[in-house]
Length: 257
Ligand code: ADE
Ligand code: ZN
Image 1 (cartoon, rainbow, N blue to C red):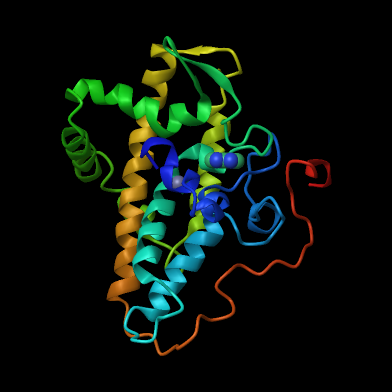
Image 2: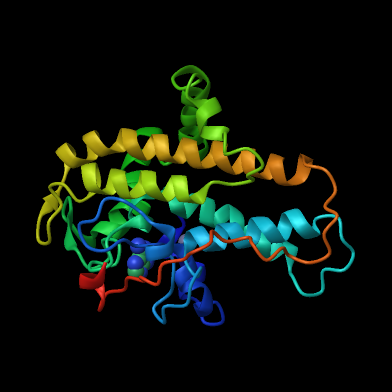
């Protein structure tokens, strides 16, 4: 999530993957609904970050021991899965449709012109890094210590997923839009200047989301790779949540939602 501007999604040749990095909700809706929200701009279902996490984790679970994987590139699947579990923990990767998860909210971060999405992808972390003399490994070590000493009683809940479930992206997306409503969009209107007040009150949320993302990725990979052999030769048909309703929301069709 914190690489500069989610580079893969912008690079030619990878543009098909752009919608797989986020899932947005109708404007000002602070809940997330897979069937309503998970689609791309052409309203093609399951093409969003939560759908992508289901897809790539299913590819890895099904084919991890198989010699017959010509159809799938499992290295790519592992890289995408790791990247998307990070993305979904950045609250604005489940933001509002109308402002493209904060991308169109232009404002200042201290004296620098930017947008709210970039503040949460990069600038809060960059500002926090100054405390560690820009040494990323020190910052990571500090978060690791917090996982062990500040949040040990929360970790089992972060790691867990439903019985027989490998990964719970819907849960992570619901947390993200809730945080976006409570803390991210608050006091961050277009044209505003965000500084110390915003930074010091939001930084704890960023640290916790980074910790949750790391713990959940580790737990997910353990479930995929420590779990036994798959007897399947093909991806099962039901890797995505089933949707009976036809309502799909996009930027043009929000009133129907
Ligand atoms: N484009 C549209 N919505 C987006 C989001 N939530 N994150 C990143 N890019 C987006
Ligand atoms: Zn991304």
